[in-house]
Length: 123
Image 1 (cartoon, one colour):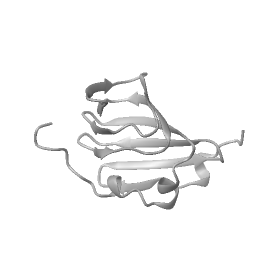
Image 2 (cartoon, one colour; image 1 turned 135 degrees about the vertical axis):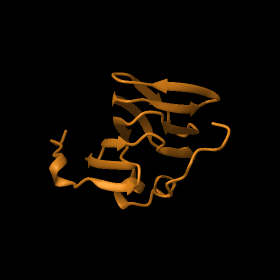
Image 3 (tube, rainbow, N blue to C red; image 1 turned 180 degrees about the vertical axis):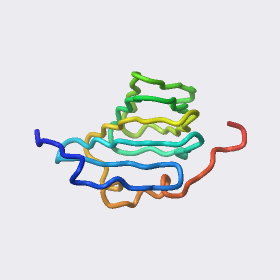
Image 4 (cartoon, one colour; image 1 turned 90 degrees about the vertical axis):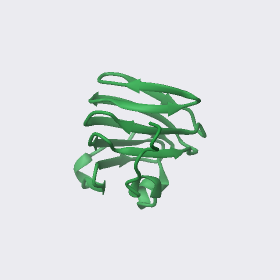
């Protein structure tokens, strides 16, 4: 596996509550993320399998009809094509690992994150 160097890819301010830094090779992508409380990822799915590992803070995921909280030192596996959304209910730092790498993230075409969307009123 290629040695990942975070300093090769500068951090990107995706929206006012979401900063990330990416490292990838042909088989895997690792995304370091810093999210402010209230950061919301609207409902979506993708072809990539995802593993989210929270370092600090807490995510609330809506996944497969369930609400799942993921806090420090916890991981969540999201299978490919699984519809999900997420909201940072505390400021957080997390890693997302994708197989294969997310082309939309590499190209900066991930419109659902760049929108800075707010969660629905019933959440």
